[in-house]
Image (cartoon, rainbow, N blue to C red; front, side, top):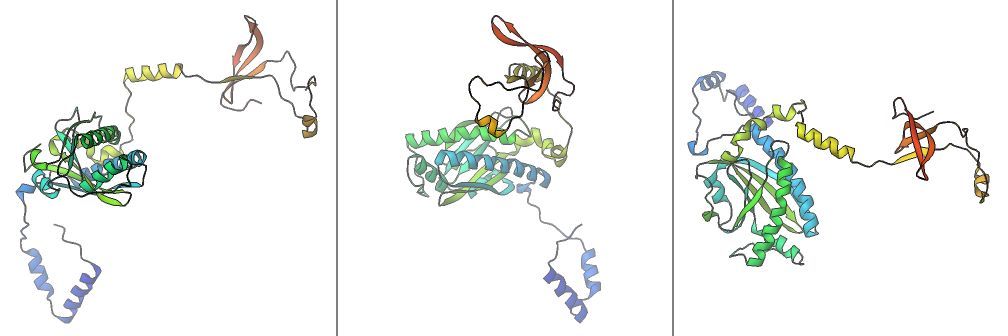
Length: 332
């Protein structure tokens, strides 16, 4: 069993004690051979590996970046959001750790079961409200009750955040998050049993001169179907997923409808700057090819075809005669 890692100062102190005789090496061996008892709290069962917690941290680091951009645009001020920590704790412990009155956004995340909570510290919540209403972002760290207008503003703002939650989770699974409830008293929000393990992602948030935390609580029941996808092997796999036939057909249809610019090159000519400056109406510029020579047809700036000029319904046209080999290379 691996022991605790000693610091350099602890190693030096141990070597010093052995050399001076204050500590006996045999005693150390005897102590090591004795059985050690580790305290285990069954109320705090660890149901996620460190690897899975790291994957969840990566997901929400992306979510934090998306929220930073979103809130910066909405509030028109300096906003910085980053992941501070990710822990698995009992649901009861999460409820005890947040303020008695706070902003609790409850999201349903179909097709996954259960709901997740985004708890926004009152400091941050009131700073957001003040900015949206035209203030400087002044905060009041106290919530008695939200007015109908404040509730509407909060709901509207965090409903828009659903899209970014969906995008952040996109690498793991497709979800369709919906803001189903906004609550201010944690005691009225009993989503799972008190001893149920939840993952809490804490986001360190700064808005203008106000700072606080946004906590995302994800119960085990939500993550259970996708736990295998949270492993490092899933993140590191390089196999390309095959597209569904419907998806391929839609992609092909959209590509066929895309418009591209086509140009026909009649020829080229090099003239001096002096000749260019004295050009006038009626002057003739000699090109580098004969009138009966085929013309170069370009798609964008890339030569693709050889054609000949003509007319259709009194309009200029080009008839394609041949396709250029390696059409992305410069035509000589």
